[in-house]
Image 1 (tube, rainbow, N blue to C red):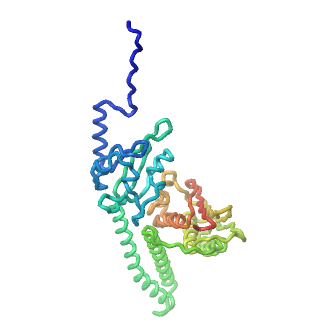
Image 2 (image 1 turned 135 degrees about the vertical axis):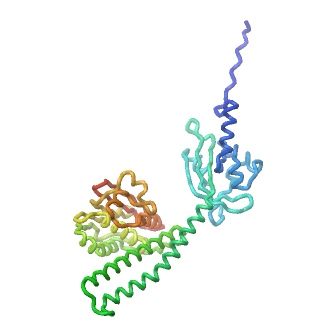
Length: 374
């Protein structure tokens, strides 16, 4: 018997597979319709599928074994290169977590391609040993969004003219310019004017949404006394609360630090939240508005004991045109745009909005805003 030590078994690579499994994985990788690029732990491209090559205009030999961040160029919409630390793949390596973001890739021919990027790090013993990036072309989606926004904008402007005429002639009728009206006729004119007002509010909402989504809504920074602004808004809604016999109360401090914000956008946010509470609270309910200053922020809360939000609807509540099913069955009028707009405006002001709710018991909406707008 030989005294020589037995040869050590060869260590299998943790990424090695039987030949038939490797062929299956390769076919799967190549057949996916979205772009996929895999890198090693040093950020060099190890695999790329045909969809990624077609989207970027490269051939495999152009980018294989090249450093990802040097060969796949990410830019802003204006063509300015994205900072390295802002790249999704870099974030995934640093944090060890998947990340998903919109960005723009520069193709080989120089054209800029809008993409949605999702990067997942490959972890081993809590360390990234590579990453897989999946990305897809957003060109058609962006064009469709633009067409939709353009249509809303044009339609909204075109609606202004007939609404102005309806408003003017209805007020002339109310004023007796075509003869004295009976009380039922006056009531009809009041209904018409109320409908015109709601239509104008809807048009304003649609136009604001269009401007936000097109990036054309500018913020005019000014010093604002939020407590005084909120008191004035509350007073404006008191007749509506009184009409529904709602106990409409508030806790607004007499003194509050001046904040830097846009008073028009701030007014829109507050009005939407309060209007929402009054609308979705039945008669003889309660709505309470409060304002609190914290270290670097102010917190607005609006609490009601209205219909509340079902559990299944909560993740959609800030989505455009969404209305909870318990509201639609109770025939409460609305468009599903108010909270979508509120969230967009709040974020434009550097703040955040969230809520707590129990179905059939009410909701509390919170808006946190910075004292200084950057």
